[in-house]
Length: 291
Image (cartoon, rainbow, N blue to C red; front, side, top):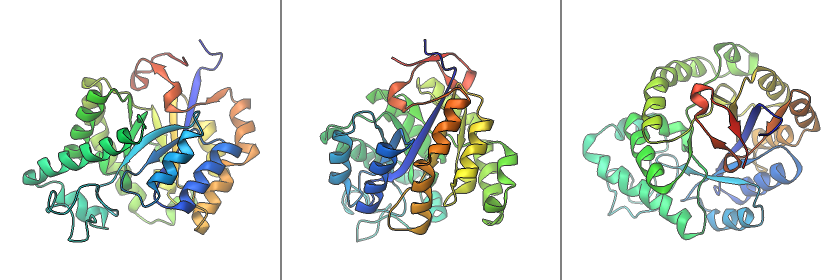
């Protein structure tokens, strides 16, 4: 058993989206505290992301299921209800959420999800965790499909965003208006149902998942506050490092901050990727150990 009783997983979303995102993910892992990345099967820089992952075996690579604001793996003839003639999903997450609520589209959603998993498998990537672009994994239909697919493929973790309400009351979060509070309320209502669904399929969830209220504004003061709030046994924070945008460069700077690493060490928090963790369910506060 590790001397640490709390594990903190840092995840970069959108891995494979573009060369600039991939370069930022590599830098955040090599020079910073990034332990995990979530790979987009339909991303334009997918092959480059696989190359980066193959030479960084300590980087835990999960799958970033994409059903909005991106390109599908299957062609339009296979999933005509989900994509346009260009093979791209709806850009607006709310539109995609409503579209995925149509029962008639469930077979198409299932086919596309399987195809995205298969593309990673064909590239030699066995995902350690699952989340989705714009958090569409929280849609009940999609969540159940992902849980079943993950269970069949031996994947251990799925993201359920959840952070304490006080985290929403800082200035950066308030600049996003009412959206953080709506997300917190909707995902909070769905969270209990999803945790039970994940448990039935043998999947684990982190106790708390930080980052939702600060999308685009994950800076050093925020992460230091998050570290001080972690209770374990496993907490997650996700970010979006990207060399091509101001927000992405700011988040890369946060992930490579020596102050963040030093604070984690001082608090007795172990930085770990999902691939390193095994044991019982974090949702019920079980003990954890690293293999």
